[in-house]
Length: 548
Ligand code: ADP
View (cartoon, rainbow, N blue to C red):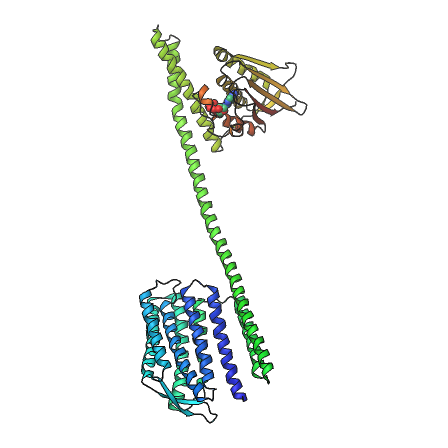
């Protein structure tokens, strides 16, 4: 082999390695994409054609020569067919397969391959170069079928591509333009060097370099498929593998002796397969990173959407609280009027009334009374939610307040047949700095609850203080008790225990929620203890003592 031959071989090897690396990296980048797979198949046929094309100009044995030339033509046929398929599919990830049509075309290409392989197409070697290699061959009729088929595939493919190009614009059109440019360059090179030179100028010198002429199409198409994706990591790995393959290949060319050639060829193959494996992994890693980045972006979008939805919900919640506040406020005056007039009727301000009328007036009065508490509860909740609860802090003795609350409730509790006791060391003082009305509301609610949920027995109220500056108000009853599961939820809005309905049907489940808000605003604590259902309950309120 002379130096020129070595140079030829080197350039063909560079081109083949290039085609292979680009083909494989496209394939590994997305194995599920029809476009990528078709490109991969095209690059495989291009490699096959390039290798055979090169070899066909090296063999000196006419019999082997004719055999290889037939193979070159067949490879060219399949290459043209795969190019047509690729152009038709590009840039779709998935195309609907028409099995019948595919079967028909593939069978046709098979038949043309068989005809191309027979003497009908390539009859004989007609001329040989001075070196004894094949220069031209005698063509049979079959060459027309071959030529027309190849031409058809190329023209039909480019027609499909042009049609799609015209329908696109912007970035997508750019992709098509890359391929078209690559195609024009490759087509031009092939026509000039593989057709004009040998046929017109009688110079077949450049025909073996076919692989080099295909490279522009492959490179441009690769770039288009990746749609500008040229990850620096994948790119530099590919270049590195490319250089390594070339270097090891060069060593084969310049080696003398069969053993050395075999040894260096194995090294070359090893480098190539390892290289492809490496590229595959780098592509995978890059893809994973891209996927994660995409997911992160999606999460960001979801978060912003959630944030907006949350804001909207807050706004709606605010509107709801405002509405409840407004509605409750509007209900208050007519209710006070109903309650007032019912009480006047009961007290005889409108003269003597019959027992039936008294009974009716009593029901009106009690119902209006219940409604007043319910409305007051809703008003309170609305103020809490709007952050508009106002507190008027002043220093007072909690014992006085507890006593007056007991006084107020005693009659009603005892009417139910329950005992109401109060226990407190009167020699001590129980000063707190608090909103008297609000604390009264809490105490009333707790004692009232105990009376409501205690069918028999009694309610014991106590007030005590410890040496840590805390005052403890406790209400113990012998009532229906509270189950362990309900206790943690009891101070939430609208929570009513299952057993509550059996004893006291009327109730909003708001009293304790409001009580908790009030006590928390006083930096105090409120909690409940119970051994379980039917075993009574103990409610506790702890406030800070105000030392004078
Ligand atoms: P309401 O009494 O209007 O339902 P509250 O917020 O005052 O609302 O009380 C919430 C729930 O706590 C009641 O429905 C009841 O199930 C339970 N509860 C409150 N106090 C007692 C008690 N002393 N004994 C048993 N259960 C109680």
